Amino acid sequence: MRLELYISELLYRYECVTVPNFGAFLTQRKGAQVHHTTNAFYPPTKELSFNAQLNSNDGLLVKYIADVTKEDYESTLLKVQSEVATWKKRLDSAEIISLENIGDLSLNVEGKIQFEPSYQLNYLTSSFGLSSFVSSEISRVTEQVREEITPVVLQEEVEETIPLPVVEEARSRRFPWTYAAAAAIILSAGVFGFNEYSKSQQEQQQIVEDTKAKKSIDKYIQQATFFNTNPVELPSITLKVAKEIQNYHVVAGAFRIEENAHEKVSELQADGFDAELLGQNRYGLHQVSYASFSTRSEAVAALAKIKKTKAPEAWLLVTE
Image (cartoon, rainbow, N blue to C red; front, side, top):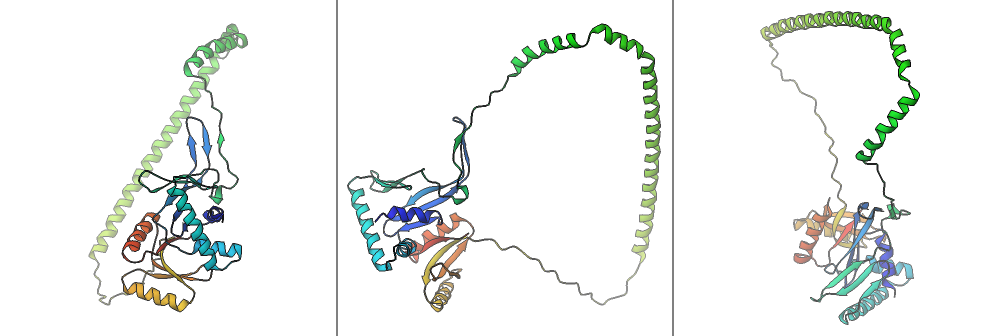
């Protein structure tokens, strides 16, 4: 059985794919990257990792393989367990297990599984069709070179296009009109300044009048007496607060019969958990959660605590 092919297909849709009695392959979104040394641009992707502690069978992988191969669940589970046993023997023999489009698995000096992800495939569907590319370096003219070139060019262009005698002659002919234009500008500025001054005086006068009127109104309001002692009922206000989105769920189990799922919810709530019924999954099973969280870090911490103290078979579900 090419178990890695089915794992690879599930990694497109799920952030956690657990191999029973072996470990879980996790994905985490990583934004676009720029390598400033090589000028290489990389699109957004899903970064792969492996956690050997999440090895309880959540039914996802086995159920998917059974649906694809048209075999029953129990026989499929036996085949998966057989493949996992083969992997463990190869690792104990100091072999490196290369999973196509996923990565390499091996044992370190402490006897723990270490994982080196493969970058051949991008599991982020929103980045489909995007590939990395290298941009050519942009050369710029330095300020020192610009200062050395620009004055010489400008001086030659001015000398060729605008002879000095013509400029002096034009200035001598426009001499009387220059003073006339200056006088017109000064006159316009004086008129504009007078208008602005008048406008400012009017605005200040209006402010004084408004202040007097306001003081008069405040005086009458302070002298007024109200005799109505009947309480006035104010209208109620309803505020709509957006509920925080919680996409990370620590799952307690999935039940074929809905009544059993409701009983499990009541049992967990009695134990102090914020349990709830998550609804049916694509396989028609009613999923029950210990609690739901808005961030992945909170959910992973709660999952580790529950697996250690309450139920080792609990697993993490991520919805979008």
